[in-house]
Image 1: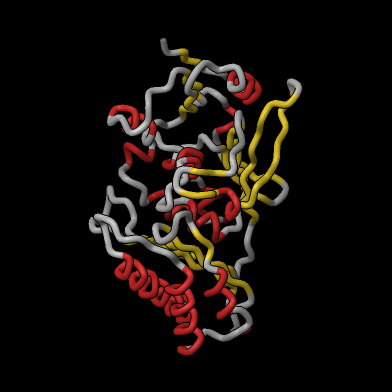
Image 2 (image 1 turned 60 degrees about the vertical axis):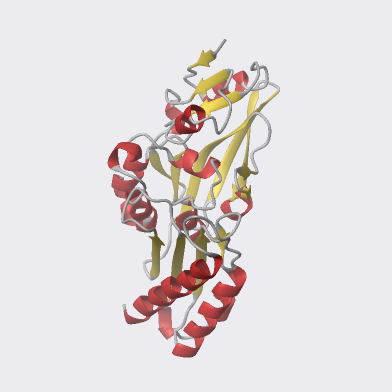
Length: 287
């Protein structure tokens, strides 16, 4: 028999997890979970904890200079939120390209991350923004929280740093200087309603004609969303020249580990990442 719970606070939700009967599923938007249930990809849960009524887990706020995003905030709200569009536009742009408007109105940013798909569309923009994730669990009837850098959150396909009876509550992003430029793009065989064959993100500070700081990220080309540290090292403290851009592209193609599947071959994905990164670097140089 299904046990269905609708807590209204984080404490209530966390208190349900340790003593829940059988398989437990956290339910927010359900845009990934429901299809998995109906197709038999995962077994039906015996206990469902519906998080939609937990007000703390929804919305966007400024907190000590950071943008704080509740894990149950819908993608449509990420897309349209004025604070995100002003201070983290690359995240708003990515949210706007997820699936269709109906799915964006239900799907949540926390679900997109906790599914731990290598193709998660919000993961690469959040890597560019050096986001930290706030995780919570109940210890001795008190909510204990810890933070994990997003690059340490993903452990493999479908696997995260979440411990037993722990939930993702918030995503925190620090504000960036006005000289900071961030772009993200993905490629699929269709313009919409498509899982990315590959995605690439680039963020850099190109002050004084040199790359002062840089972040590169990749999606769908490794077991997890990946930060491009090798390509970053090539670019740091240098002007964007043909030589440095070529070296960065070569480093990017070498540090990813794509697979061949029904959507694309390993070699195609590797080449695609190089082309996408090269175009972003050229646009940054000419902006």
